[in-house]
Amino acid sequence: MQTLPIIRHLIDGQLVTGGNRSQEVFNPATGQAEKRLLLADKLTVEQAIASAHAAYPAWRATPPLKRARVMSKLKVLLEENADAICALVTAEHGKVLGDALGELQRGIENVEYASYAPELLKGEHSKNVGTGVDSWSEFQALGVTAGITPFNFPVMVPLWMWPMAVACGNTFVLKPSERDPSSALLVAELALQAGLPPGVLNVVHGDKEAVDTLLGDKRVQAISFVGSTPIAEYIYATGCANGKRVQALGGAKNHAVVMPDADVPNAVSALMGAAYGSCGERCMAIPLVVAVGDATADAVVAGLKVEIAKMKVGPGTDASNDMGPLVTKQHFDKVKGYVDQGVAEGATLVVDGRNVQVPGHEAGYFLGACLFDHVKVGMKIYQEEIFGPVLGVMRVNTLQEAMDLIDAHEYGNGTCIFTRDGEAARYFTDHILVGMVGVNVPLPVPVAYHSFGGWKRSLFGDLSAYGPDAVRFYTKRKTITQRWPSAGVREGSVFSFPSTR
Ligand code: NAD
Image (cartoon, rainbow, N blue to C red):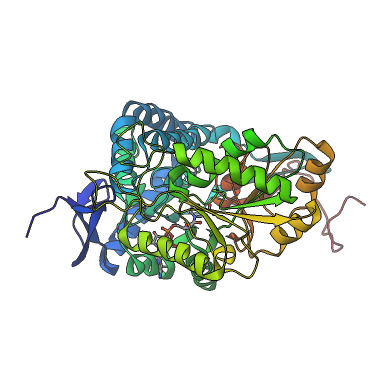
């Protein structure tokens, strides 16, 4: 048997082994196992939690400006090591290098935002709330916090979480996706180089056993999760039942409405990237177009057909490719199964990517772009998240009909409208039951100084990821009221409720 390089855990500043189970990590472009990942057992996760717990008091006491400086140094190291990080993303996830660089850049912007922590943690102050009484709120760290992340943004989503958590004075245990764990681990090693003390950030690899240990351990105060909705719901319910603060971001099925007055060629260009970029493995991808009017639908389908024919599918390491492979063989089979299902359900398969061949990469998990027309509400390919390069077109007669469809769907992560009509756009953005909305912007992913979160079954919890919400999520408000009576002045007892009456 071939000996594969081992991916280890990072605990207390050291790369360590732990757990008797392991699994292979594949290169999706070749279908070959290239590394072996250790899967943490309960004891290993408890060691990581213990390390984070021990590191907490000193880190909490470290001035916010010093914590922020670590983030500033990390930003520089991430930029300097961008090629190495992106190479790991492409080797394990499969996305093209330019796309990996895009996600890294978005992650870096979160590190940059975390470096503003001293400003963000300033709190609120009111002088003289009563005679001689001052009051202020400060935002204190929680303690040990944890993050569990999905495969599709292996470098960015961990950076949504731990930089702000540690900048706020917490310590952290990260459990990255077991399918593509190496880039998050490299970033954590760079954080140590940037000056993060050992134990402030620990990385454990693993599956349900590792996650359940985090969910059950009393020392873990808060959990951030990003992944599929069934697991998000489980994490939220279990974490809350165990008394933790939880934010759990789940799946999506994002609709793009194309109005009759839209600039169709530009809408088609935008839809191509939104549907097929990263092989459709984005929670903000557009897998559904809702065209208002048959003429609009015909123009969109015709335009997409032309553009799909120009697409290049192949390994993500070749910069001339537009789309790489799906992440694993299992996911490839699942996505292909949805295409078979759509045909069986009666949708019109306008472009069939199922037989795409990439010379020299016959064992890779490549699926070409697929396009369905006449998708209907009752179909599984409409209801369920496919998470692959499969775009469906639906036909409706009015904007209201399009909005009713979107509002009735179980997910509410992202949506967008293509139009030149300001009134329609304003009505749409005002009323649609979705958390992130674009107007002629197909992927309305908020920048790092806003926050990211869907509605309905795309987010469990009250606070969104990163940005200002992250400052609130990773801190507890404490409100202090104080007065300093003059020495020697005798004050009587007051039995009525204190007020400024
Ligand atoms: P996933 O739910 O399979 O896995 C996410 C994490 O949960 C991984 O770390 C995994 O190890 C862990 N996990 C898996 N099964 C578990 C179980 N039974 N018990 C405990 N932990 C478990 O998701 P994925 O396939 O890695 O990622 C794709 C999904 O993530 C899609 O549904 C996508 O929409 C969603 N996603 C959502 C957002 C968002 O912001 N809303 C962002 C990115 C991805």
